[in-house]
Image (cartoon, rainbow, N blue to C red):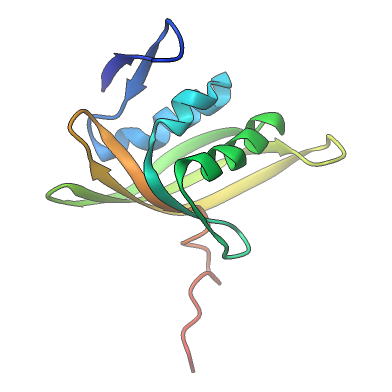
Length: 144
């Protein structure tokens, strides 16, 4: 893991030096409320698959979704189930579980069985595609 100065603050921001670091850093930055550090884990042109199947394109739009997660006090734990890499691309199968608050501020349990693709950058690995529900039992429907 590499630490670099956060350009918008005086603290150091942690970056992943291997794909398997990414989920842990995501959780740490999210729980600390450091939105800029969480967003920095994503490539500028990253894609995020929402629960409805909508594809959110770009770090700025993903930052909006991350803002909602911090406002709802989402707390997660992560566990990398499998990591596959070739050259400058890594794929992670990651389980996330934790809690969030709904609109009525009631705490509810959340669980995600994610598929994440990362690309190696000169100084770290950045997420390029995230499907938090990509490994749900009903996520892939094959034609009959």
